Length: 222
Ligand SMILES: [Zn+2]
Image 1: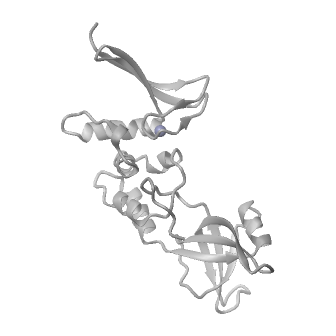
Image 2: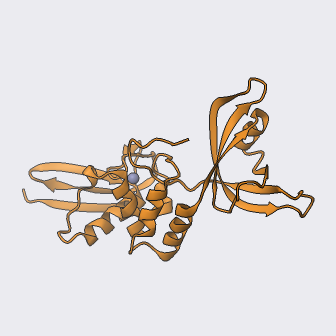
């Protein structure tokens, strides 16, 4: 029998499947792409998240031989493929949450085929600073469960919009860290003295962190 390949978009499975690009789960009933066919005498069927499918298609299009096998890729190569295909933000949702990784963002910012807006965002993220802050348990809990989407802090470390906060729960009675940590980005800020905020203090509006991808095996430096 001859070799052939068939692509189908918008397929919905009745059970979860694994994406062959990012190796994360495609939930049951989530639309995805299916590539099936026959190669070297064997039948195959592979499933991909939509954005992963587009990243792979772009990588194959850009490769001079038109053949790219992502199975040997590390996460860096996947990030670059997502950026090149312009699906980074959507695609990152399928990856494990990673760290604020300057190198990952810089790699995206340097992708010539990535959309300008994405490169600018990546450039901004690459410059963003990480601030490590102690947080008392009651406040930590309120931030984690979303009741407290802000921080009031001494304005002593040049906070900027886009910076990332690593909040470490700290128990003042036991005088020690509890081991819990939460990450948030600075989405907005107002510096005192204005609106009742004293000079030397700053109100920080918290926003979700757009996740970057760290290479496999990398560990948080905090
Ligand atoms: Zn995927």
